[in-house]
Image (cartoon, rainbow, N blue to C red; front, side, top):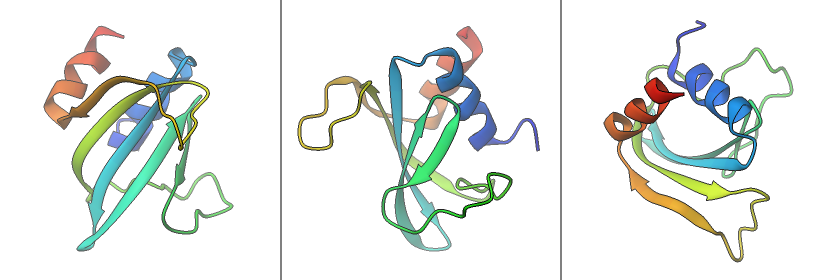
Length: 97
């Protein structure tokens, strides 16, 4: 579980608190957008479990895109660092951290 996609992205944001990751995913044929900031994940489209041990981003989720945004995140005027990253591109950033 420590090496799950969600945990890896949360660890990245814990190390880079100046960034918010907006992850567009498909979970069980349903699209969702998840914000990850300072080591925590929250769904922007569905209720998020109160229990932090319940993963917001399950391992079976299909990542569509990842956007890197400057913190604090303002949904009305986001300041993008990079947009539309693939999981493969993000993995390279995770490896560098």
